[in-house]
Image (cartoon, rainbow, N blue to C red; front, side, top):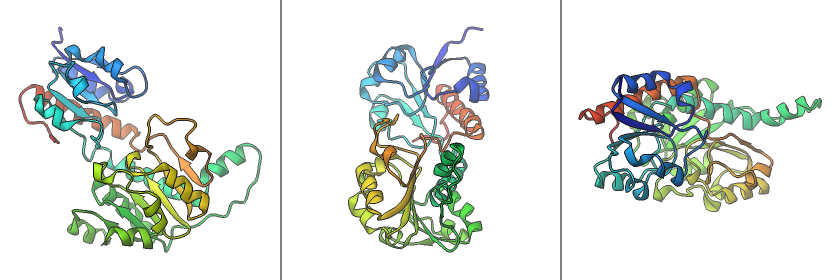
Length: 319
């Protein structure tokens, strides 16, 4: 069978983890070109591949006018994830390129890792793991979640799942959102408050804000300075939301007792990043959505969006 449509997949591990999605594309006359670099593709790497591409299943590479100018056949970009801050949507629209995302597809995975990072930070799990493997028997004294106030900045789908999972921990959950979902908050026993109260009254602050120009470095010296002494900070949303130098200063000064982050201002992260040499912080490599279940479901979701767009139907999650 001759496959006449070409789909570039820049999300990694596609054949291994998204076999259903790949099979769906191939069953609909699509030849799949995969990212074999194991990381986001550079402009140079994209420029060598996009000339005859009809569709893209995009990871976190940068998709902008410079790339679009080299891709005259490109009709749809289906983002393998939720955030689309790496895609110039207006430039895409100007060229007739549809953009979709996988809203909701990774929500449970991100929510679960967020809970895991909260506990890891409060109980010093990574440090104890490393110490025990060295033959030490450290008696780190951590803190419990019970009775604490967890504040969530942003109350979208992922944040709502975090709140639901926290309901069994005997905590108080408060949340801020610019466009609050009052019904969801009531159903989950979450009190909607302003951002100031989330910062000043929470023992643990989780940021789940969207990455927008107005939210860039939302967490900075000022906002960290308004958090409770000895509080914890968790970021599994986007690295652009946090001024990393300010986060380090808050940890070094003792303003924060601990932090856990999965995302960074620069990705892939630099081994010289000062946060990697700062006590009290748990770090993971943008892995919140990395589960077999997420890859399988988003693989099918993004593949179907590509097929629908190429066949002239309105794809799901069109932005």
